[in-house]
Length: 251
Image 1 (spheres, rainbow, N blue to C red):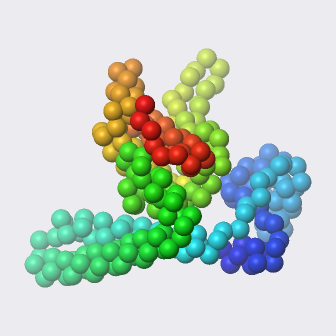
Image 2: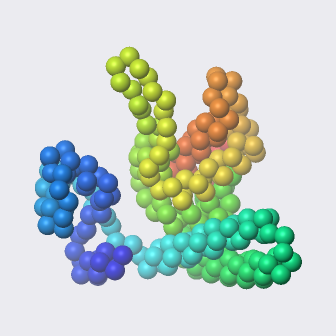
Image 3: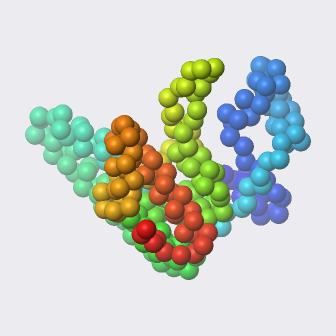
């Protein structure tokens, strides 16, 4: 954000907090009202009571990569909607119009992907991390770029923090003797969606991860649950790879 960039240029340390967490903290204090003045007071109280991690400033190349990654995702999502409209349309003129729009989107997506490739190639840090990530099964150009842009913390986190940040950590829903069904959620959903497809590919192509998925399904887990578990395992492996600066090693 412009504020975060201005603080970084001024050398002022900053902390970024999820608004839902701030609201939950306010509720825990019994503060149900919500105004700008109330929120400012709650954030101040939260910073004084909790040990919140500092949010380091982003480099210019990382900000540019994030912008390109966001634009690619926007174009792909809009293109998917146009493809759906094409399957629902029977009028020839409308089909031709949708076809022209889809070709335009394809050119734009190709242009953005070329810009992303150029940016990564020009940066020794991004280039080395991307090459390392792509040694893992299921990780191609799209998922590697998503990890570089949307999870720069990769390699500096614990396995639990890594899974939680992407929303792949199972959340307990227990009460008394009732054991609720574990579900995933929260975190960085766009990145989770990309990694799910990487996990799906890895479960098909990597013998170790395929055996892991089959073992879970043999224990009664649904196929989707098994793929989510593979995705979580793959992400934890990627975190260790970046931390130790080593390529993927099949066990």
